[in-house]
Every structure is written in structure tokens, then in C-alpha cells.
Length: 119
Image 1 (cartoon, rainbow, N blue to C red):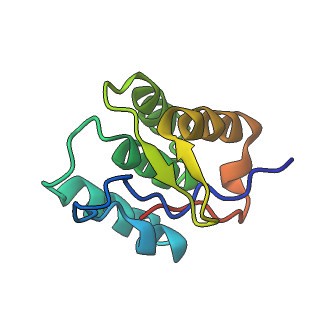
Image 2: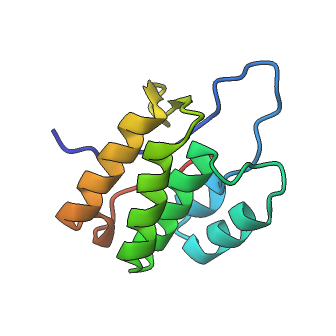
């Protein structure tokens, strides 16, 4: 099964406002803008899995595989794993998404036009 979307990530905290993690920018293919938005967002902890996964996606799309790999691995090690909602409406553990992103990176799938984004 091809995993074409790691998109629409939303923190599973119904009562809290969801911080911006570059969803719109990644959805539109504006990877550099996503990196800037995510890195400038002071509401996000450095080890926030959605932040790390989306930064990894943006770096992977820009051809920076080692930076992407570091982000995905950090999401795997995060002390705060979360259930994240994909654009397809599925709720998935952040560590599962990070493992899938690493596998996609290893297969070179970020070099293709597959849609991968988070919000």
C-alpha cells in the first residue's frame, strides 16, 4: 500500500487551540515558507512531534535528506508522542507517522509529487 499522505496533522487536544505547523504551506508546495512558519512559531515545543515531522517533510522535499532524517528520528524519540489526525481523517500515533516518513525518505518518495503536509 502506498502511503501518499502524512497530511493534515492536528494535535489531539480538543480544548486547546491548534498551533500552526505549516499545513497550508506544505499543502501548496511552499516548503521554505513552511520551514519559516514552523521555526518562528513560539507556541511549539522543540520536541513537538507535529513540528518535527512537518519540518522533516519540508526539508526532504527541498532535497535535504539528512536534515529530514534528523527531524523524523527526533519525532520518534520525543517524550511527548501524540495522536495526530491525517488529512484523510485517520488518527495515527506520531511515532508511527515518523516511521512512515523515514521509510518514505529511504524509498525516495519525497522527490515525487506525492502530497505530504500537516496542519
